[in-house]
Length: 505
Image (tube, rainbow, N blue to C red; front, top):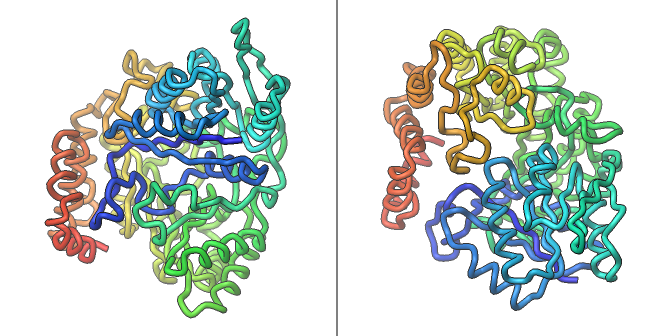
């Protein structure tokens, strides 16, 4: 049976320097979405004919969608959406139904799982998936293929097409056998990726041991029973990496997708050994990176740190992505519910990583509920002490369904009509909360000047200026559009942009 899968991205097109890469919405394999990609691969494993469609807000998706439906005649569409993509995906579902009212449309993703009543009320959706969709969607596809009523499927809320009544099925347990997940078929994504042989990602686990209020993991964990933090065996991970490197022999770097690679140190040690053995047989070693959560226990145990960093170095890790989020311990502990660590712990860990040649890429938030300008100054000071190689700075966006959204709402901080109202491409570059003592204007100013304050005296003027100007541009859609048109996507500017990339790393 023919099945269409749709993924949406909040940007125009990737940077391009050749006709071959022009118009591709994804830059490389690190932008493949594991949720919909896993479902697509599982459907292929069940011998369905699956196609991947990737759409952006900036380009007219309808001609491609209509042509696909009219020529391929799919029986099922699988959609996914985060909060800010939901209005766009809702419009895509409406377009599907306008073209072929008989095709079955199911949608999943974190926004739908955490806001099922809103999602099931959308006329373009025949069913919604609450929780993990691996098993549910394959069962749904089998029912549709054989003309059987799609009822009684765990994790699915299904509309009766005749009566309009809702069948709210229970949510099944979390999938435990992670090795049973088929390897992602990356060829499905190749038509949408500018540089498929560049960096890519491999999923090594699901679930997070922590309950941070701004993240959806704590809410997602409540949806099902069973162990939430699960990992693939090191042997299974390496087997997929081997398959990827055979298909893309020029590949140089792989990001290992997991909430924190330090959740289980026994597992991490085994994975490092397996990756080191894999690289030992290669002339060109693959470089790895992963997420990591700092804790006081880890930062304060020199022997544990040494063992961890030795393992990273042996496995050829280049960087760790670490969430500082806020330099205010009050904000981290009372508002964000972060794992416990002091600012000294965080700085100690980052400096130790650098001694082992491991780069630190840091996540930082600004504009958080109850945050003051003094709180954010602490964030500046801690980040400056760490001197990370890369910073991912985002203005706080209140995601519906998270505890921090509820906290902000209860304090009257959420603007009226907030949900789904922002442009998806600007969800993390717009100040939403006008906080006492930390106005939207001040939040925006701190966002723009962050690189100057963190790197003054450590980076050269050009590097600081480029990052500062780029983040100022991100705040203004029209200026950003001109930048992309005249600089980033302009072939005549390729020597200049290549120079900046070499200079800034």
